[in-house]
Each structure stands twice: as structure tokens, then as C-alpha cells.
Amino acid sequence: KAGVTQTPRYLIKTRGQQVTLSCSPISGHRSVSWYQQTPGQGLQFLFEYFSETQRNKGNFPGRFSGRQFSNSRSEMNVSTLELGDSALYLCASSLGQGAWETQYFGPGTRLLVL
Amino acid sequence: QKEVEQNSGPLSVPEGAIASLNCTYSDRGSQSFFWYRQYSGKSPELIMSIYSNGDKEDGRFTAQLNKASQYVSLLIRDSQPSDSATYLCAVNINNAGNMLTFGGGTRLMVKP
Image 1 (tube, each protein chain N blue to C red):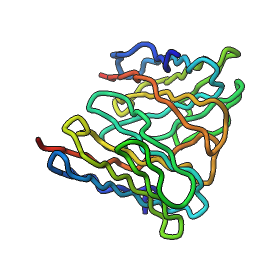
Image 2 (image 1 turned 90 degrees about the vertical axis):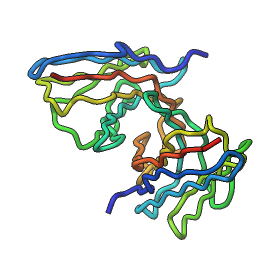
Image 3 (image 1 turned 180 degrees about the horizontal axis):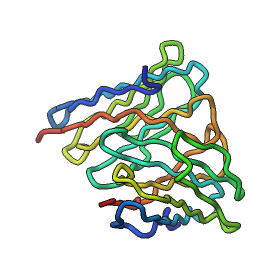
């Protein structure tokens, strides 16, 4: 089975721009979660989608948004980019939604904001 | 107090030794716990999950969970240089869907 895929893998943007990142979960997985990883803050939860609905949201400003499509693919969008948004953005998929579900991570999208 | 805490390391062990990685968490109601390994420049990969008190073994890896003391640990037997990586402890705090709270990670260095 193919793993979680994320596109693009690398991205360079300038402050004020917006960016859209894409994630395709493992086939059959219906839940997609997004995380941000930075050297200073570590891995932080952004949001989770299940059956096209946002189920949980982390403590991030409204500039960060996402959505999930009927085929479980997900996108996240960051508007009005700031330097501090430079990070590795990770998508993780799981079969269902619940505390016991195991999440599998994609390779990540490395975003650099100049 | 952080919700999930790990010693940042580096933890240095000789090849063939047992590496012991520890993690504490704050929410007593947490039910699921995960260990991920992350090589530099790569994404986290799952090592194992544990849900019940006690030990869970998978090959050279053993996860230990003690809910009363609110800690979870990972033992790596016969450590190899290829085990050198950052090990992340993740907890489903408050059983909140698929939202994981991660510790800062422990960097493990296995010296040949």
C-alpha cells in the first residue's frame, strides 16, 4: 500500500503571500491530521479532518485553514505568510477517528518564508 | 508545565547497549501513547503504540506504560548506530480524536 503523500515537498514564499499544501492519505484512511514542526516549538497539532469535517483544531491563528474532500484528500492553506511560518508541515492519516487510532506521517512539506 | 515532557538529550550509548528513553505526561485521563522515530530531515515513523499498563515488546523495542505514575518509556535493546535519531513520545491527551500532543523528543546517539 502506498503511504501518505504530500505535495509539494519544498516551497519558498515571501511574506504576505499565501500557500496551499496538499495531502493524500493512505488508501482507505478517512482521517487526516496536520502538524507543524519547528526547531523552537517542536511538533504542534494544527487540525484534524474526518469525513470532510474539521473535528479538532489546535492553537493556531485563523490564517491557518484546511479542508478535506470526499476522497479523503486534504489541503491546508496559510494566508498572509509570516517569517515564523517557516516550518516542516506534516500530514498524518489514520483509518478512523479515535484515541486509539495510529497515525502515519507523510514526508512533509518544507516551507521557507522569506 | 508542558503536557508531554522528554529529556532532550543527547543520550549517548555504545553499540549493543540498552537505550532507555523516558516520557512523562500531565493528563491522567490519557489513554493512548505512541513512540515515533525521526531521522534528521525526515518525517516521524511509528515505532509502536501502547494503551495498557505494563510492557509491550516488538523486536528490539519494548514500550512500558505506568499510568499511575504518568510515564511511558521506550527501551531499545542491542542498540545499533542506525538507531541514532530523535525519538518522539506522543500522547492522545483527553482522548481528543486524532489529536496527538508530542514531547520535544530525545536525541539518541549510538556510538560504534
